[in-house]
Length: 332
Ligand code: NAI
Image (cartoon, rainbow, N blue to C red):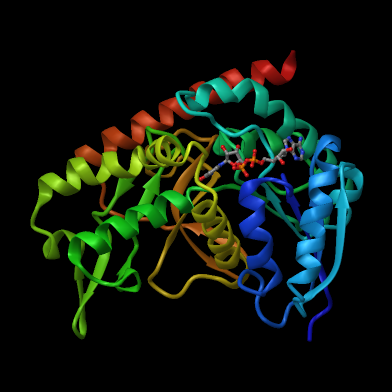
């Protein structure tokens, strides 16, 4: 058995955390041999609710959970953590665009960046879920200069999972038969879900999704808009934003970062851009990455056609604008 690691979840009294904490505690994310001390951070007003969450965590009787630390103090919540799920933020309500959230939420991530810088391990792996996730991750990193920029990532895995599920359903195959579906850019309605590099198992062999699914009009149009608007569709139906699926995606993202991806497979992660694929540099942009030894690398050399180039440019432009707005909010 390994030594326990400290893992923080912010927004721990909220709805995403309610599903996420159980996944982490039962070993789905860091492995079945990795004990965990769970730090649960929320705001002072939510401490009563958090008490109930702690009771339930105890009552789950999870052998890997070696301690639970509920707190409203970032200095305690971030102390010596090796992994951070930054979920806590104001969620998007029906009719609200992500941009409306930016000024409210970006300030939270400035403060949390400063706290991570002071209190977390320098190797901490940070996953930002709270929206606008990409720009929040950028701001968080900016205010944590002693931690490498590569350690700050934003979640587009929910979009990837949604895209993969749409394709599997369209092809009437199991979800595990489809891989390398991609999300480029921002976790917003400008994201570019891309199945051009995706593969599907057909019997003993693997073929390109575009060959198995000759309906290019669907791939180019309905598939993309369904994935782009899925978050809004869930809000319209549930009157609350995606939570169970967001928690599952957060677990998937961190598990792949921690344990690695298999050869030839890649996943989508919002990471600091080096300008690959003509995306703007120095924004947190969702790229295809492969992961070894807890280090991600942007997968290079995927062929990009004019259609994809246009979409990558559009979502990149939005991220440049968000960066501008976020920086001006933070400097106020
Ligand atoms: P929720 O409202 O149920 O929970 C949010 C929790 O965060 C609340 O308990 C709140 O008190 C707490 N919180 C607020 N400010 C905080 C702070 N400064 N420090 C610590 N905790 C704080 O919201 P839910 O549904 O859990 O969603 C959380 C975030 O995740 C939202 O921003 C939502 O938009 C985002 N989200 C992102 C997705 C993605 O794919 N990247 C998908 C779905 C949701």
